[in-house]
Image (cartoon, rainbow, N blue to C red; front, side):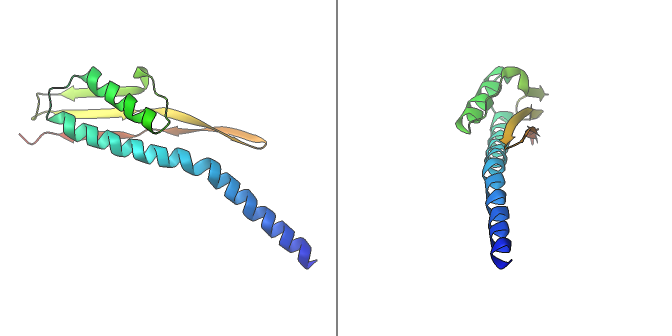
Length: 118
């Protein structure tokens, strides 16, 4: 009976590690993308970059983290002028996760808004 509990316990631990192995990388990539979006928002508020240039930069950052984005998934809105307006960047994407016997998609919505100080 004791060895059966041990085998069952080890099975549960292995299953939990496998699920973590599948779930942690998408969340970590999203965290890194969120940080890149925040940095891009702060820097682009005070620059003359167009919304298309900002969108292209976000898509490039996403590729660095193995996230495939299309221009339709990245929304960039600039209100007001450079340095005295606001810049909002919203991204919507999902990542498929395949587990044995179960498949799902995790939806992510990283965003950032920065307002100029002038």
